[in-house]
Amino acid sequence: MFEYKYTIDNKTKYRTVVHFLIFAGVATGLFVLFEGGYILAWFISIIVAVLALMALSIPRKVVVGEDGIDICCISDYTYIAYNEIASVRTVESSEMKFTIPIFAAAGFFGYYGCYLNLRGMDFVKIYASKWSGFVEITDIYEDKYYISCDDEREMVERVLERVSLRPEDNE
Image (cartoon, rainbow, N blue to C red):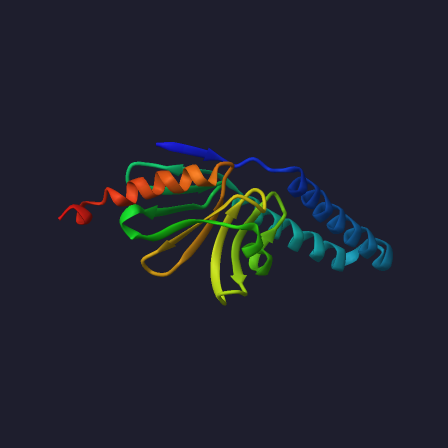
């Protein structure tokens, strides 16, 4: 079993601070413009709810285990069994230029959620603490998962080693 913990880089920390500053600026603007009131209360309620939902989906670690890959978030858990993996490869940074968030966090304590890859016009699920070092895992259902880690080549080797040991390959 190998564990890859997510570590947030400085760029992601700065983006998180910018998110908080924008939220605080809008709240301050609404306070000054409407002198408080229900619009400010609605805005704060919505922002707190969205931030709570986003915080529960922040990726924490990836575990390459005996039977599959576990992607652990604060409250979300994704499991990809080795017998469901069709391909695994590293992703170059240039490929990520054409990936945009659809229902996702883009820099708020990381990058996670559903993104659209404009090159292939397909949806991908991204679990990343930084916008580099991606590993693409495609399952037999053609779902794509992009996972960031510090040593993506090692992760690909470990997953390929496990995928090649599948029982149906030995028959």
